[in-house]
Image (cartoon, rainbow, N blue to C red; front, side):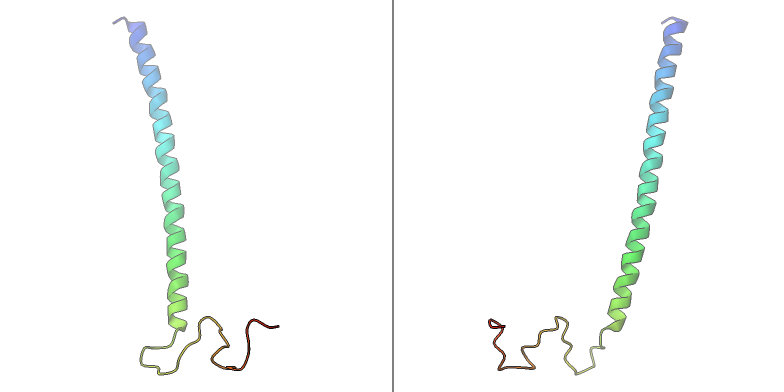
Length: 79
């Protein structure tokens, strides 16, 4: 192998290594972004869970806002 071909091979490898490093850095940044989004979602879930009544609370919680239990004579098909 001549010195010129070795130098060309080293340049190609150097360029490929730069591309791999750039890809790794992009993946690292994506991971940091996703971890931040996951943390935010976990905080929102914890906030929602804190607002729910305790299991010892005997009151029924109506999460769907369904009025059928309140007004049994109401026909939902007529408006």
